[in-house]
Image (cartoon, rainbow, N blue to C red; front, top):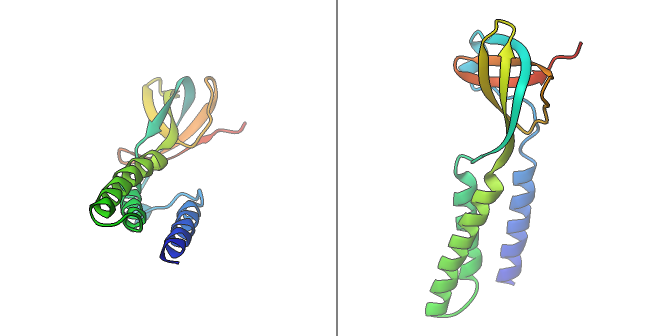
Length: 146
């Protein structure tokens, strides 16, 4: 019964974790009131990259793996399965936390070339983009529709 409850908890946690990203840009309390700069230009080069997460997936995976591992084995075997579960969960969490992204080289209308990383997008060379810059941070990258 304990193993069943642990498994159900894991499934529910994974479902809710997957539902947290709505795709809507989110600004922190201080960012929404700052002036942002709009940059417009043409993509001249695209390279696919992966972005490592902030570490929450690794920690969460290790904790869940450790809890699941602790439900198996007896004595020193229980310790080994707990440690093994934590290690495997941590590695799996780190991999699941990676996000697909594109590194875009953009020639701005001003003639300057910049490089910007855009998560979860599918841009191609020759497309025109609008970049919203917040200080040195990129708030968004969108296609310019003519």
